[in-house]
Each structure stands twice: as C-alpha cells, then as structure tokens.
Image 1 (cartoon, rainbow, N blue to C red):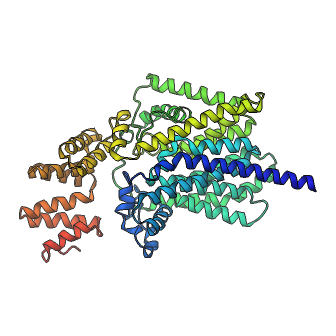
Image 2: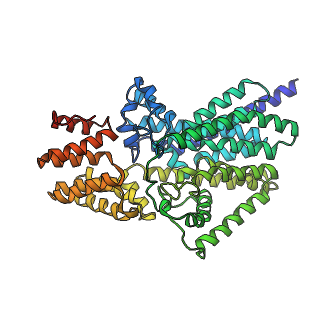
Image 3: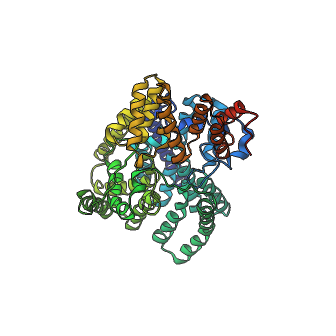
Length: 536
C-alpha cells in the first residue's frame, strides 16, 4: 500500500512539475503582449461593437455575427467568443490589457488540457509534456493569442480538447458523455470549424482502440456529436442567408484546378511554419497556376518526404498515424478546395491542426534520442524551446504598434490589399493624409477586380477632404455597388445632402437603412432629412 501511495504521489508531483513548467514558459513568452493595442478586426468586434456593452444583450448575441451585425452565411457566428468579450468589457471596459490577459489565460488552459489529453491518449508523459510546451510557446500561435480577434481559435480548441478528454472517460462514468457533448456545442459556438472534432475522435477510435467491442461502444457514444455537427452544418450553411458574392481574395477568384495545384504549397508552408517559424506575417495570398511549377511538384515531394520520415520514426505506429491524420483533418477546412476562403493561408489556422504535427514530431524525436543519456537528451529540446520563446517575444513586439505590424508584414506579403488599407487607416489617424491616400489607392489596385469596398470608401474620404467631390462620390458608389459597405451609405448621403440632392440622399439612406437598420450614422442622416424621409 505504501509503495502504491508513493507511486501515486510521485506521479502527481511530476504532473505538477510539467504543468507548472508549461504555465511559466507560456506566461514568460506572452507577458510583453499585454500592453499591445487593439488592432485590425478588434475595432469592429470589440471597440465599436455595441452588443458587448451590456449584459442585457446576452440573448441578442446569439442572433448576430461576431461583428455585431445581422447574420448572413458569409459572416462569423461565434456567440461564445462574443460572450467572453461581454465579460471582458464588464471588467476592463476598453482597456486592451485585460483582453490580452484573457487570451493568454485561455491559451495556458488550452496547453494544460492538451497535456492532460495527450497523456491519456499516448500514456507517455514525455510526449504529452513536450507537445503541450512546444504548442504553448510556438510563435506561429501568436496570431491566435496576441491578436484578440482570433480568440475564437483558442476557444474552439480549448473546448474541443475538453470534448475529446471527457469522451475518453465516457466508459467510466455516464456524466462524461453529457459533459463531452456540452463542450462540443461550446466549441461549435466558438468557431465554425469545430465540426471536424467528431472526425478526429472517430479516427482515434478506428485506429487506436483494438478491442472490437470497445470500438463499437465508443462509436455509439460518438453518435450525438456527429448528429449535432450535421445539424449545425445544415443550419449554418443552408438556412442562413448567404451573400451573393464570395470572399474577395486571389484564391477565391482562382479556378478549382488552380486551388488544387496550390494545395501542396499550402501544406509545405504549414509544415515550414511549424519547423522554421521565421518571417511570420498575417496573410499568405499565393496561388499556383502552372502544374510544372516547382512550387507545385516540389512542394508535394518535400511535404511527402518530411511527413513520411517523421511518421516512419514515430512510435507507436497507429498513434503516429492518428496524429498525422489529426493534422490533415485540422487543415481540411482551410484547404480552399471545396470552399474558397478570404486568404490562401493564415497562421492562426494552424492552432488546432498544428497540435497533431507537433505530437508526431515529438514522438519521432523521442525515438531518435532514446539511447542518448538523459542529461544530454534534454539539451536539444531546451534550446529549441528557448528559440521558440524568443521568436514569440519578438513577434509580440511587431503587434505592439499597428503601423509597425503592417509595414513589417507587407515586406513579406506586399500584395495584401487588406494590410495596405489598414496601414492607410493608421496614417489617416496620424493625419498623414497623403500617405493614407496612397495606401488606400494601393489597396484598391491590388484587390481582385478592384472591388475592395472598404478601400473605395476610405479613398473617397481622402478625395472629399481634397475637395474632389465628384471623384469621391464615384468611389462611395463603387463601395456600395461592390459590397454594400455600411459607411459608404452615410458618406454618399451626406455628400448628396450638402449638394442639395435630397431625393438622391433619400434613396441611398433607404437602401442603407434596410441593410443596416441599427447604424447610428444612417439613422442620424435620416433625422436630418426628416420629415421627408420615412423608411419603411
């Protein structure tokens, strides 16, 4: 009995040590991000989002998009993420430090539960610890952690890991079945690609569980998750109104064949980011159009070779295959094959699938170094961890200032019309209107078909300031024609009012009010024209 108690105490102490190391290393890696400002979509989803200002809006949060607008099929439905913002606002108002701290805490919790899950799945504390630690401090995850608007990525993964963890205990206690389902629903309401979780669990059951009876019983327990995923998918993509146009991006404008050719390079880029996290940036917009391009067949050969080599050394073989499929299932929603997205690749899309690759790589390395003396065996991973932490700290500094971030990232993706537009907004705030105008014009020119409505509106504002009213009006009109951009309605209507064209202003405001009935500027201008204008 004493031996058993000593063994249990030793295991608890070891677990406590591992978890403490994970927490300390992650906190040290991200502490310099706490004072970073709101950036990019933070302003829409947090700063200007009235839905998070009052707890009386809890019910409304389940009816609107992440950006506080009426739901359409092309928008993000993430009420759990909004609920966390609601709690943040109650505590911190619009102090970004609190929101950053919340992201870091959620990321730490995710890493800790990753350790617990992998310890359960592999029965190997070393695999669980090194995977969780590398995941926790890896700089590729800064886009999910340091960028507040990517919190949905953390929440979906956190609840997804808890879904899986509780599912592994379903055979011991029925309560875990229900808790697992609840966590899965929370994961779905955090980010849409949580629909892949049943597939990941299914692969584990099919590959790793050998006993046929146990396998069948676990598959039955997975049926509620599969049913919920199918219902969610049907509602989300078939019953919610979808915008007529798809996302505005080079990959969305590409043909199916071109997207297929681009896939090998996408996979190789993801692997490269995990192994060699240099030159990190917000958007990757490449599209491959030639089958004979080295970026196509070269990427395919190199990716296959890397994955094969890692899988060959990783043991046990079935679990290695499971983690390999975790990686591929995780990136499947972002492959751009079935549904083209607003970018070819984004780093925060690696947050969940990267876990599978990291676990696979750790299993491989442990086998390679298995005969190395214990003390010497620690040197390479500790050096790698230190390198990752330093890269994370450095990347957090890029996020400390929006101008610095956009300038840095545009060096690696100069064709990003979104970043050119965002840089223009920052120049506008600094009252450098010439540079702002240049950036907005670049954003227009670089967008597919020159249809980026936000940049058209913003460039219109610059032209209006210069007294070029006719040109400004033209850009406001294009902004509305391309994507019914909300600010363009108010700007165009205001120009018409100033010119005495009340009938034209009335028509613009009626259309804008129909699409955005809660918009303050549109309603204010309607009041200016009152009583002539009375939208129905």
